[in-house]
Image 1 (cartoon, rainbow, N blue to C red):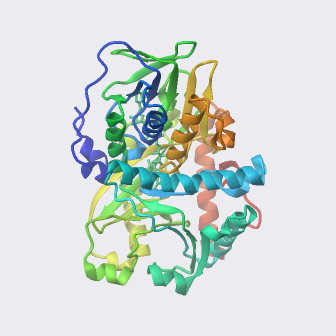
Image 2: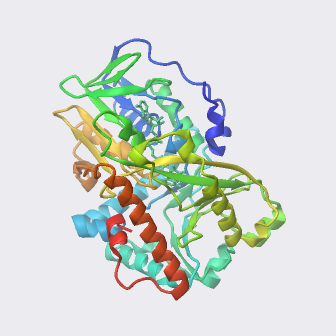
Image 3: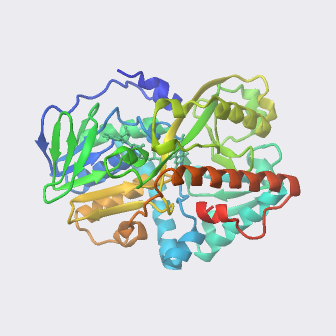
Length: 459
Ligand SMILES: Cc1cc2nc3c(=O)[nH]c(=O)nc-3n(C[C@H](O)[C@H](O)[C@H](O)COP(=O)(O)OP(=O)(O)OC[C@H]3O[C@@H](n4cnc5c(N)ncnc54)[C@H](O)[C@@H]3O)c2cc1C
């Protein structure tokens, strides 16, 4: 059996990881869910809360939280994979506003369920800082603010100058920041595994160590495994990046890695220099950009923005362990906080997130095939998965609501290009985006108009 604790610091400190029993022969339920990550578990949780008589089974290849849900940066915030600018363009102002409001609710629902179910996931709603670490980042954060003004939600955000930012935390080179009030920090593996237990308390069954090998659509859809089939009225696919490994789904989603390095617990005197007392999640762009978390036990987790795409979407443990990315992360962390010199980095890990071709998540239920899908968050799934669970619950229980009118509820994922185009395209876009950042650091400004790579990546 795998040593699951080695897959992230979060899993290592999430309690007992002994797998639950696998599926033992074919069975029939009302709803069969592939994947015990946050998408699958939020869907199971909200379905069972809505209708406790439902028979819900979750089928998981490894253990709950094995995927991105047990390895991420712990940003449980209202950021949606497509920013208001893109949502307005594709769906209009009202829809863009509705998505943002639904994301605010998602952040709060995560906290409310943690409190109601006694999940000790270190949830703390203290907001999110996007930090400008160079003058040329300032117009970018001002543009964020204009986007939220365009949907009338600017009260939930603030623009801070260098001095105001330093009142919260001292980040080297910070010249300002964009503060998002609707954001929380979580210990993601504790959240996922606590949610799994809450699902079981409500009568759901989770089969671990049971890999789905195929999905059978139709009037009695089923998850097919080597240990038997789980036949249901509705099958829900919540495998995110791993969905690309299922027969016929290789172009549905692109698996992209993300990596994190973690310091030892810092001394009180170091925290005095840094500030950051409220443990907001923080991030910044640029060549030393990344997403950061101040953990409950006083460490800094730093996730450099340097993911990779494995040729032909081949997911393996090896793609998560890229020493050059970890080293870049450690160097970048020192660039942010020079007072970390001499501090030990005790952990490093990576995981795969799923990127859809148009960056838009899918939260749909197709009654004809009996298949529901909750996936496509890029790097912004911690709170978004909660929304998935609530949207899918309304769709599956035929509850007409504001949630079922969100654009994700009728979205059809656009397929990625076949290989080798997909791999070449990813490399080219990543290279161009990196060049834009490097040039901006030299010249002090970004190109006036978005480059082709920025338009393709919808950044
Ligand atoms: C390193 C990293 C950092 C991130 N940081 C953040 C962050 O700070 N904030 C944020 O919002 N988002 C972040 N993300 C993204 C976020 O973690 C994901 O969007 C979210 O966890 C997706 O949840 P999920 O349940 O859909 O997928 P996953 O958590 O990947 O779960 C899918 C599950 O399905 C199982 N599975 C797959 N295939 C099969 C099969 N054939 N049969 C049975 N089971 C199967 C897997 O084992 C897995 O447990 C990050 C991702 C990574 C990798």
